[in-house]
Figure 1 (tube, rainbow, N blue to C red):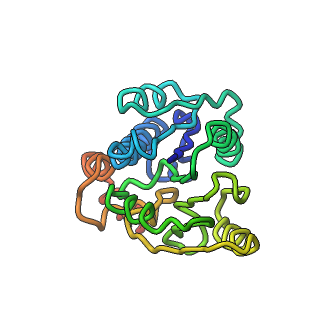
Figure 2: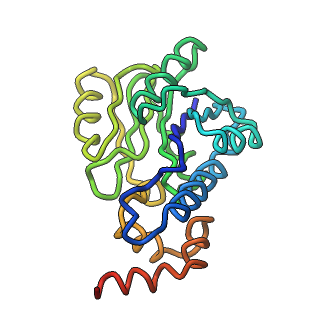
Length: 218
């Protein structure tokens, strides 16, 4: 099953505050989440997609796409949300779990398929973030093979944990999945790509390239 953890988006993306207002940050977070959801629609039935959230908007969007909704009442962070979802997968007897964040707007269905096609009989598939520090996609087979701990420097611990199991580890560099948006410089990277996502169109509508240029010369 594919898992997407989403916290309350009304206070999302604080590190973008030098460029975006609170309302804009919420709108951008929602646009990116929808970009991720749309890429996962082909997998709603097989292997299945679950959104892990206590955010009513996220639950509504998941329902519209026929995703499973795992209610995260605690909303204590991405790591705890995935622990909850992992338990759900184990209880349901799912073959594997595959986690993607909700802030990778350039993810494509084709990249997701690449990950699914290299699943080992037992082990992990890891997609690094573009900075080489974060984990932007991780598949575990079985679903609870290793614990997951997300954050700015999650990649090396995840790789170490996967290797420590003695099972197969597959690492795939996928450019759409690699670009997560947390900081103003990430906005610039996103805007430098051909426009094909809700998030990019929104940023162009807000004339964010001009704002970034002004901030750079301030």
